[in-house]
Image (tube, rainbow, N blue to C red; front, top):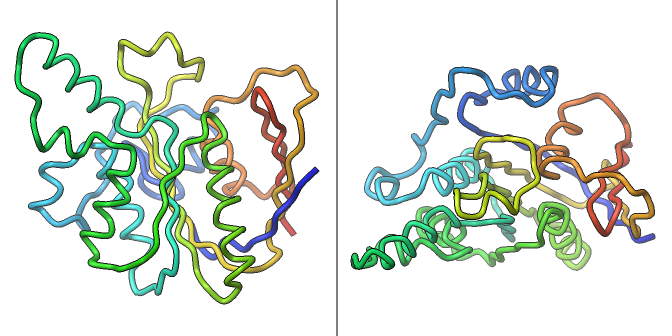
Length: 241
């Protein structure tokens, strides 16, 4: 078994219809059901000229990142997404298949690190940033990346931004998750022992939860001291001190 330790100084999540932490608490109490009225998440911190070209997913990612990092000196940023801009990529492919020209703007913003690039441009911050994709355990690997960095730079502050949305229609058959909406989760991590995350080979034959990131958000909302999240290969154990 391997483990890491860190502090989560603050965190927030945004999704259509889930804007405040009370919204997310109600979501958790209702077995992860989104409200009937999907009110758009705010985008007020994104510059208008920039957001009009952005996908709804990148807007969620950028808004959470900007909101949580205001007045903070961020030393390293980890963006993570299992599927990234898959919706935009599929639209580009469909346009090409019917003989239309691919939009240069859509093409330039269809890459996996779109949100990471947009954040650094928007904030004009010369901050090291990486973008991670690691199947269903993507957010867990983002925490590992952040913890490794903090091990070497214990006085620094790391921003994690995790975001995703359901796969577009041509790929839906490959997604076993329960229905969910696009979301973004941001957290500020520092050196400490408030949380311990450990992992080992999964020996339990149990279906993985619908979206590990949502399971992590649910754990942070609750008063439980520990939880275990499974995927097809590993079991991830969280302990809150």
